[in-house]
Length: 257
Ligand code: A2P
Image 1 (tube, rainbow, N blue to C red):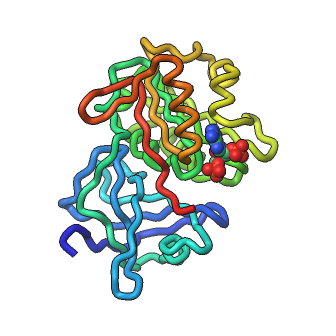
Image 2 (spheres, rainbow, N blue to C red; image 1 turned 45 degrees about the vertical axis):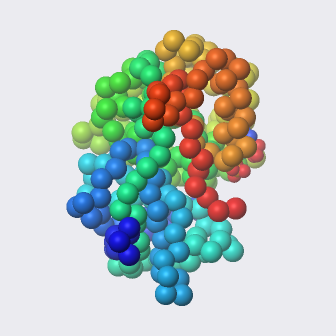
């Protein structure tokens, strides 16, 4: 398998019945930009079964980290959810993706807007010192149906706030805004509605979206991305890519339905 590295699972954590994260060894030759994705999988019936996964670890870390849903009849995740420390997995030798800082025009506020496992690439972005160099304020919005689905994101943000290297920067610049749609919680509603109504900006003490200063990265379901894209385009925001940086960038959360 020339395009795959064989890695070893180092830890697995189950957050809910439908969400887990895991860490794995990293080949010294594997390079990526924070925010990118690669292929991950296991051997099934003698062949690698792979899906795209965003890297939730930063590119300077020794271990790889991934955040995954468990789909009961999903060909890969129904099996992958049973991995244990020491198991072998496949990880692609190359990473790619548009959710990278270089695809954004310079700005002051960076909004990281995610639903579900769309949080994963932003974990990598939040661990990147460059993010804090380029932006004065970073706002992580994570939308889920139910409160327990926020647990991984909460743990990551707590870990970063308490980290020796990043703690001060994160406490100073990062605002974490979890929101839930299907049960009571301190923040409620879809990201789209929170932006349209202005509730998000009121709650975090920020001005409404401003094309001069605000940049956005979006990662979630196709429906969420399409609605947010429309909302941004209506405000004249331009989507960025590798050939031309823009006001916002988009990647779908890699999940099997
Ligand atoms: P809702 O509960 O109102 O559907 P999912 O698991 O379906 O991907 O949903 C994850 C989160 O994203 C849920 O809170 C869901 O809200 C929200 N969501 C689903 N579709 C959209 C959309 N088109 N725009 C914004 N948020 C969405």
